Image (cartoon, rainbow, N blue to C red; front, side, top):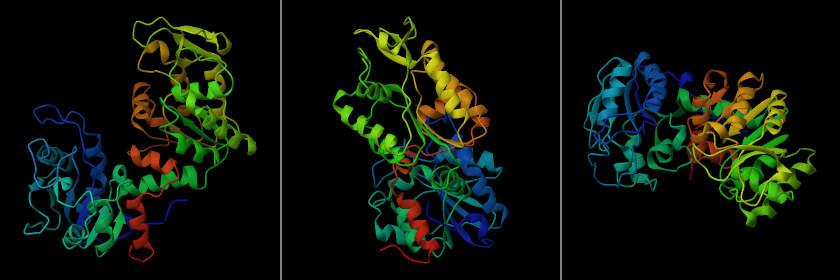
Length: 400
C-alpha cells in the first residue's frame, strides 16, 4: 500500500506563496514550437485550484536533458509559459535566475520559473539548493508523478525543508489509483506486461508474480516464456539466457495457485514491416524462420475472457507489434476487453498509451498514469523518493 501524504485539496492556501513542481516536459519541433501539450494540460487543474483559492503561484519543471549552470535556447521554458498562459487564461511570466528570489508574484498570479534542471545541484538533490527553493514558498506542491522516481532537489529535497509539503491534484490521483490497483485490489487482479525483453522488466515480473492472480505476458517477453515452456519460437525476439528466470516467475505463480497464460496460436511473418505477410498458426507450427509478431485469435479470445472476469487490471505494454495493422489484432482485442470490463483498470507506459490512443479507449480506462519510469518503478515494488519525502512530512517527520 502506498504511503499517506498531505493533499493540496485539504490545505488552506489563501494568501500563501505556493511552489508547484509540475511535469511540463513537452516535445517541441526544431524551432521551439510545442508539438504535443498533454502534460501542460494535465498540470492546469492544480494550478487553477491554487489561483482560484487566492494563492500566489510559482511553478517550475524540467525540460529535456540540459546541462547544469546555463539555459541554452533548447532548454528554455519560454514556449511553455506562452501555452500555459493560454490554458489558464492569464499571462504567465517566465522568471530566469530565480533560485535566490528577487522576483514578485501576487495572490491570483502565476509565474513560471525557468528550467529547474539547469540549476547547479538539481540532479544531485543538493541540500543548499533545496533549502533555497523551500525559502521561496509557504507551501510546496509536487504534481510531477512522472519524476517521482528521481531524488532531485525540486522533487525530493525541497519537500524536506518547505514549511508545508503536499501532493497536487494530479499526483494525488496517481497515488489513489495505484493504491487501489495494487494496495488493496478487488480480485481477481490481472496484470498485463508486454515489451521486447524480459531483462528490462524482470523485477516487475517477479514482484507481480507475488501479488496477481493472472500474469499476462506479451511481445518478446512472451516469446521467452514460450521457450521456457518448451515451445519453438523460430527467429522471434527472445532471450534464451533468461529462460530460467521465466521458469522462476511461472513457479512463483503456480505456487500461489495462479498462472501465466501463454499463447496457443500466434501471428507470424518473416519480417517486421507494413508489407509483411501475416500468417495465423498454432504455436506448435512455428517454423525455424518464423517471427512471432502477435498472438492469434484463439489466444486473444482467451485473454479477453480473463480480462472480462477481472476485478482489477494493471496494463503495461502491448502483446504484439500493434503499429502494423496485420499484427495489431491481439492488442486491439485486449484493449477492447479492458474498455468493456467492469473492473478498475490502470494503464501506464509509452507504448501502452500509444495503443490506448490508437484504439480510442481512453474514456473507458479507469486511470491512465502520466508516469513512465515512475509507473514501472512502482510496479517493481520500489519506493518512489518524491512520494516518500511527502509521506515523511505527512508523518510530521523530516527525512534524514
